[in-house]
Image (cartoon, rainbow, N blue to C red; front, side, top):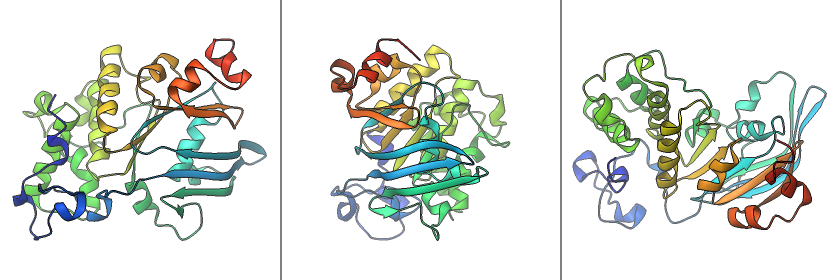
Length: 293
C-alpha cells in the first residue's frame, strides 16, 4: 500500500494559482483539492449534539443525546441492535430527512454551526461527511467514473486533474495496483471488498472533513475487513472517523473513543481504554461482558 505521506501531497504543477500550501497547512508542498474550503487548517473539526431528540411518527428513537466527538480519532458507536446507532449517524449528514414522519428536536453543531435548522445547503453539508455504508454501493458506471463522479458534481471538469485525482485516491485505499489496467470496466465486476474500498475512494475524492462508517465491514470477508480497518487507522491522521459497529472485537482493535448506546440514549462515552477497562455504568459492564447483545 502506498505511503499516506503521498496521500495529501501533490506537486505545485497541479495548482494554477500562486497560493502557497504553507499559508494553508504550514507546509511548503502544495496539494490539489477540488475546493479550498475543505482544506483543514490548525483549528479542530467537531461534531456536537445538544439535546438531540429524534421522533419517527410515534416512536422516540434518540432521547436527549448530548455528545461531543473528538477530532482526528476513530469513534466507535456500539450497542445492541435497534438502539439508535445508525439513526445518529444519519442525523449527522441529514440522510434522516428522507424518513417519513421524522421530527427532530435539539441541535447538531458542525464546527459550531447548527446543521439541523432550515436553509442548510444539504449538498455542501454532505460533501463534508464521506459516508461508507454497510453494503458497498458502487454507481452503475466504470471504476474511473465512480471516483470522478463527486468531483464532477462539485465543478471539477479538467480531464488531466480528474485522472490524477482518481489515481491518487485509488492509491490511497490500496486499490490502484489491482484495477489500473481496467479503469473503464464496470465497478460492479469488482469483489465486495474491492467495491467497499472503491466507495471509500469515492467519498475521499471530494475531500470531506469527516468519515461516517455504518457497519462498513459487516458484509466483508476477514481479509477485506482488516484492510478497511487499517485504512481507517491511517486516515484518522487527517479525518474524524465515526464508525457504527456491532463487533466489539473491532472496536477493541481500532477505537480511540467509544460511545455506548442503549434504547436511544447515550449510556456512556469516553476514551476507549477507559470504557473497555473501567466502565462507569453498570449497563455498559453488562453489555461488554456479553450479558446482552
